[in-house]
Image (cartoon, rainbow over all chains, first blue to last red; front, side, top):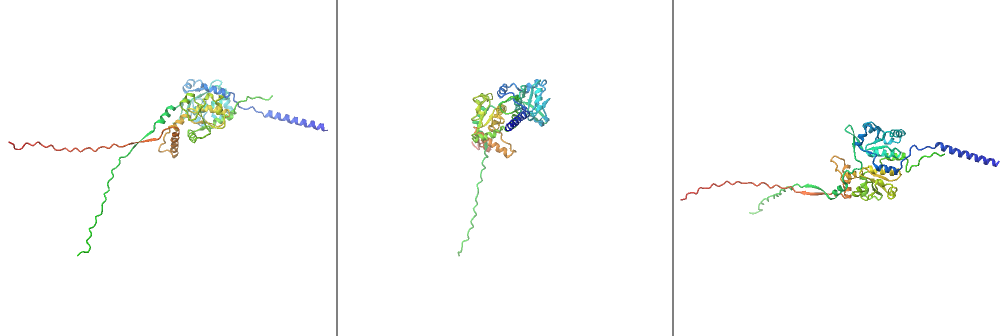
Length: 207
Length: 190
């Protein structure tokens, strides 16, 4: 009797164990995205700067490259964008549809990213490159909407606008001069104190 | 039996995407100047520009870690820590941002970027533009803060008053013309 109970217990625990294994296998999900390029490789790649595209270079290959991605918000995109650009906002970059689109299209043409500033496009680039899309370029432009028109302006990345050392030296030595013009003092009129004339007293008494 | 998926270093792509969307990583030049002036002990400035640029000018007490060497054995411990607030900067945002992104992917904490880099630093702290008369009180306060902060960083922006006395014009002299005496014909005579 005791033996029978023991085997029962063992079999129940074996079934339970199997059940746990089966459930865990069923619920096991492969993560949707995983980085394929590690940081060391990414660092090496961004050091080459070959992924940065200036406006003049873009003009040359504009006709061939038909896969341009605008990473700004859809509101900004609706106001104006580069011809033939597709809008994939930075926040929707990890949606399955956009990832598939980028993967399929970048097989033929390099994907060209642009945003409000090169930094915005760079953020999208860093994400996509590390996810394993090697053929992406970043357009070094700033885009803005002004005077009812969409403008694209080329900028040089990492350029110092002023010579820092020289500016600092100049600022340290030269005090700012302020010219003060003092108004000429007005001649003060002398006060004339008029003393009241004493009335001649009538001699008192007398004869 | 068990399905394998590649292990990746650092954080997951989803978290990385969330991090790059957030603007919390930026610190303005005014906030940074305020923290330097108040001698915040938990502040570590890191210059990510090339060596020549660093040697010609950098922010006070900044450490030079070029972008290419952020994972080198010698310099990496400066970034992979949890004691200091690290401010990365370059000429503009670009280089600092790339360094930030790679470090952020590795899961490093307390990393910030100087918004606008040294270009903005110079246009705000070192050479601030005076506000217009019609601007708000805050604009004037910000301007005076920037002037004072600039003084801390060595800008001699004390105004020296130079007095200019108006030149007095001497009153024109009256020319009194004396009538010429006619030569008298000597009277009489022999």
